[in-house]
Length: 121
Image (cartoon, helix red, strand yellow):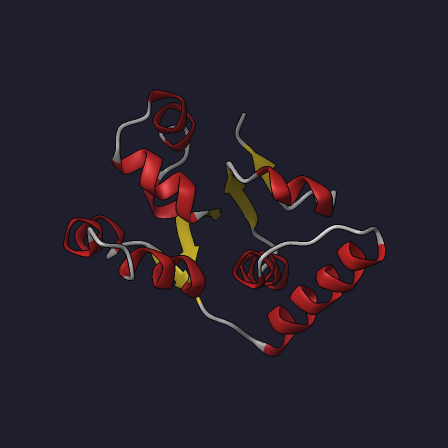
């Protein structure tokens, strides 16, 4: 499975060709997101337009392991003078807990130096 970050989902739905090209290389049944991404999308002003396209995605929930992984990432980042949003840390924690790759456009994830993160350029 590939976890799609919120920015990737939005740009895919907007038809941004570079994102569409990458997403279309994965089978639809391998695309998923986290509960954090779902929250970020459903609080969006265009919620109604976003509900249908995401309803078939698998949604990973939080777990004790995910919370601990997010906290560990926070501690590593802080020790190097870097920061990330709590939402991004939780998304990362969920990916690590489930051994899934995160597909994102958010360069802040570069600071994690993780094999579980793929940043679209």
